[in-house]
Image (cartoon, rainbow, N blue to C red; front, side, top):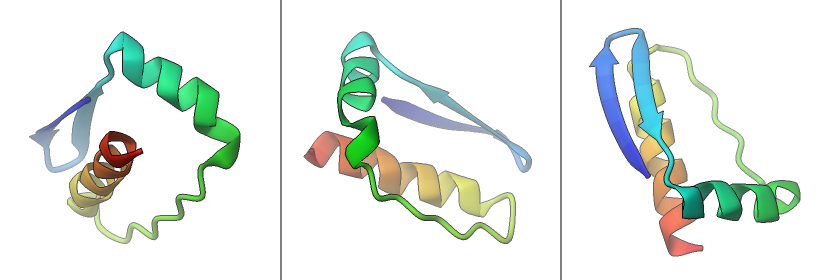
Length: 56
């Protein structure tokens, strides 16, 4: 999974096939809750999510 901040209000996330498999397989088990007040915080939230995927 790669995360690219395109602009202040856009973040592009690229998922590889294995990432999609992981997400579909574990979707019902994910307990991710992010409170995002500013658009820039999306990048940090997605990075944390990507780290949880990589660690899972």
